[in-house]
Image 1 (cartoon, rainbow over the protein chains, first blue to last red):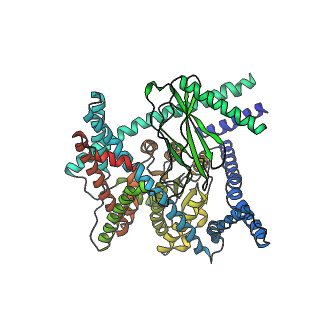
Image 2 (image 1 turned 60 degrees about the vertical axis):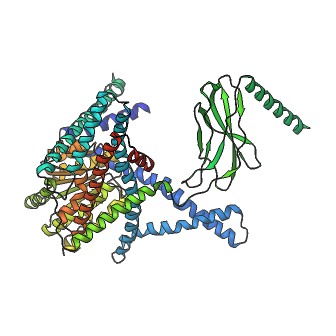
Image 3 (image 1 turned 30 degrees about the vertical axis):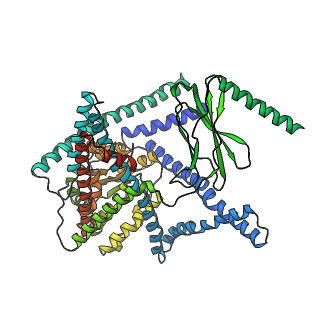
Length: 230
Length: 381
């Protein structure tokens, strides 16, 4: 069975790699298989990890508890299960997405969209503000505090000053409502130079990672797959 | 009788461990307090105690807790020597817990602190530690609102040239002249992603132009919710341009939510449909180069934009134009010239001026030995 799996994985790997030559039926087969299986898999995951535990189970338990409550046989457990009835609101909002299926009621879809965008923006914006502004500013200033304390080597001092200059110039590059001329233009050019140096380093670093992935895959084909033949 | 024997045994073991501890000079943790953790949902208690001297012989601490009327139970792993606090995040709301901190020596000898007073976990409605963040958000929002008001009152808002956005009309025109489609890829972000939200608004602007030119706009989606949002946005754009007849919902479709299956699908579409223009705007991960390189190989004009700094180098290498980070957020204002977006853009610039000033002032103050800006930022974190 393991050998069968190795063969499937190897043949599909070769099908995908065949794209390097040109689009061909083997690549198309692997692509459609990959897309189809991934969609099927995600539907199963959504049902088992989303719909059933978050919507179906709490709601059905709440309905059973409601029946028990109506019959006058309430226990502390039934009272707790009744809280599942509140799930009706998010489920109802979610169901509005299906309004799209009816052209006349399609406008209803705007409500869940507005709630989702508003809710997610509300969560994202404070986190971005904290992580991308406050923490970054703090990280930039911390070395200067150490510099004053005299606990930094010359290399670190040069590095901190360099980063400070780079940050300020890069920030100036991202001013949009100011014409980039004169000193602003010069500073923004220094800023974009800093960005490009950073991107170059990131490019090299990531390419090395990708080459490692290629080596790993080639190793799989040579050792695991060809190993089953020879 | 059994109970009495049990009690006697426990008493003996306790006496023995205490005597062993004292014989080895182990002193119990002092000033042990247990308080409801502030600014949480009421599901944790923080236990604190004084640091033991370095020569105390303590090699670690074990936390024990007791629900009112119950027995003692060990919680968590052994804490290393030098620890002075522990957050018990395994409590149940409504129960009162008392804690003991047990000091353990290298030889296994133990000595217990006094038991703390019982404490209950209670949730707070407001996280007081986030007040500075809230104030910053209010100020930032006020700056944006003021600038939107200013822009709407007719005052012209200058926006500097962004080459990547100037090429948008060129790309759409090229696709129209060639009679080919435009492929718009939003990346892998959901509706909670800022780059995806920015990308969706750019798509709305591009859809206005494609509605005018009747150029097919193909949008494969990775997220079903994003799919519904952008269908609505693109439909609205076509309606605003008075071309609802040109809108084809089937051109905006769900492909898959799997990263590399999505990349494989988009690549396949590129080589088969050969779009004249490819927009890669939003949140991207490792699939960025796969898509950008394929788009390059088919000769499409490519305009990319992302705030994923690790993917920007690939877009810069393989695309004709790249919107770097914040340029992606500025794109809507740049393309639409709508006073609301322009005002918002200038408001963001005001925010950057404040950050700029904070950094310059912070550097000067830190070098002078005044660290209140750093302390403030530390608290906000």
